[in-house]
Amino acid sequence: MIKIIITDDHPLLLEGLKNILTQQQDFDVIQCYASAKDLFEGLKLQKADVLLLDINLVDCNSLDIIEELIRKYHDMRIIMLSVHNEFAVINSALQKGALGYIQKNANIDEIILGIESVLQGKKFLCKQTKTVMEKKNLSELKIIPKLTRREKEILTEAASGLTTLQIAEKLFISPHTVESHRKNLIVKFKTSNLTKAIKLALEYGIIRE
Picture (cartoon, rainbow, N blue to C red):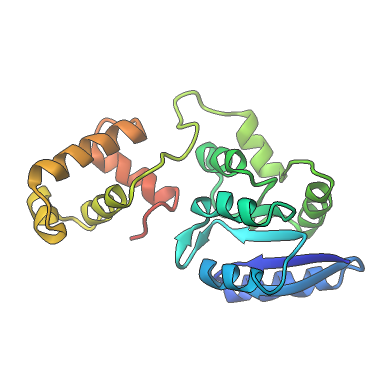
């Protein structure tokens, strides 16, 4: 039996996917989790052959945990489940070590085929994702920028409408430091201003509103 773990913070999707996969003769959905914390705790007790991982969990962006998961459980194949279909997000997931990337609105046959493919060590992209990768816009980001904890904090506060001075006061740092981080964020996102960087960060799930 192929042991599968599903991690997704949407209860209806989680239950629906579990029920469908359980009906497959060779599949055994051994656990379902709603957060990265629960996933890591659960993996200490029970390991899987395949992990279906929601890209945006309630306690983290899953792109940040792919490498750690592979380091600790190198025999487990990871398939990302996502509503994001941007080149940078997909490419980042694959570069970090995910073997599969499937849109949440993909049909069940693609998910089954994806599981079978990654078990053979093959990369798998659903049809929608494959189209995005083939039609890559040269002006788009190639990967999701790697941000520091402080950069994420400043991006989040700026997204909420706080000024440089207000962010500095809230985070107990100097306005000069905030401005320096703002400039770095614009460079990392390859945008002309911070507003556009915030828009991309929200689209990619790096920060939440």
